[in-house]
Length: 462
Image: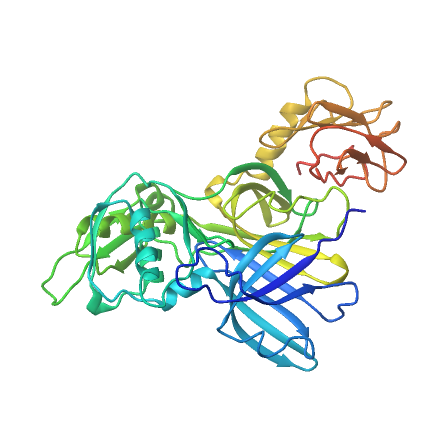
């Protein structure tokens, strides 16, 4: 069994003026969720373009009030000595014999800062404007947060805008508005206080496939037309009923599919180009019917489980399900990750996914694809970990030599019989393929293919 992860929590004073990165003035260091940590709990998340949150409990007699001073502490969370979350201690609530502490990520503080002087930007990349606002905030008296510039990708567009100090724009809101431009970006302040901005978006297109009922527990799916719009009326600043500064943007394909569904948005930007860009981005987001599955995995220190960080916020995965109405085969992005940690090393990961019905392959299409691949010749079923998905080669029915599972370039016979029980050979743990009767050395992917079949006489493609 793999070693259980160790969770360490450091509390430090707030960063001093001119101190970049994490504060090094530690006031507390606790090992969380040890073997005798009954009743303790730790949960944290990563959210797209948001600060993220962390919550943990400690016995009421363990933390001192002075060390865990609300509003005066940075929180640094480590998993096996790797920094995985950072933010501020903002809440404490005593409940019976435990204290529940709440924390918010570094971005939270930018929502508590305002622009107090006029700032002009002429033909400047939106990502550069965003970093400039962070930099300006840190140059103010007692305003340094220790945030450093990391990766700020060029969006390929330039904007001209002014922030009027008399209006006291909130810096966090101003950055969010820049990110929402059509030529915007996605951003974070990483656990180590690095400001990063990606254009047009963060994340990688992974080859990971999540199959509800095989790899994961499907804890919910939302499809909702409430926010749909096929035509958007984009309004600017208006001081009277005679001010006609509106733009009308439409999506012909969406109108043909759903009919005319109108909505309006208003922006205070006087620059029509900015209003048009923001309106177009809003329309593109609103013409799609989102599919948002929530997939949950339990991790308990078993060999071969997905490595920490294998899939990150913004990454794309393939999500499939064949549970009656819930019939999906879509590409979906990870837009939130929640990690619940319990004593004895149990880790439960929940990923909120965001996909689009327009990319959904029907069950019939999946069957047709599988049938075409399976009709090559009569031989035992093989599964290949390909770049895009699991691909079946050969016919479903087989006799004699058992099914094979490919990982990379290595093939391993599951068993001499066509039907197996227990953990079948589709489960890859580290460098071994495990079935009911034997553990066979293998090379290649250590991913859990999760083929979960008692018999290879059925198609895993629904």
